[in-house]
Image (cartoon, rainbow, N blue to C red):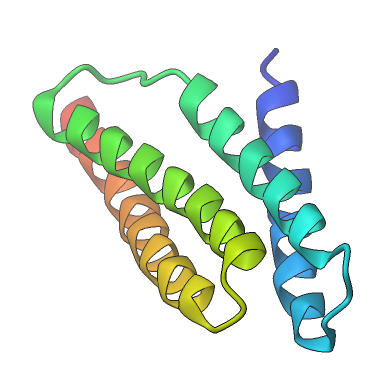
Length: 113
């Protein structure tokens, strides 16, 4: 199980990147690739356990889950709207994911000291 979650996250991230990059060409299967990848990323982040039980780390993990759910919402926007609304949602999700990926290791290191 320890190797399954990182592999799921890696494959999902590759699919998200590929689906969003190929969407520019208006290929009909790119929203499907993106959404499957977003679901894999969300599943990996939801099922990853939190080793530290402090309030700050729990809050950051919740924010990370919100970011991954916004990735799925961006996939829904790819299907329903034909504009660039999905890009806004993807950008918000990417900022949240970037912030939590920087802050979680800092907070975990602070708690281990």
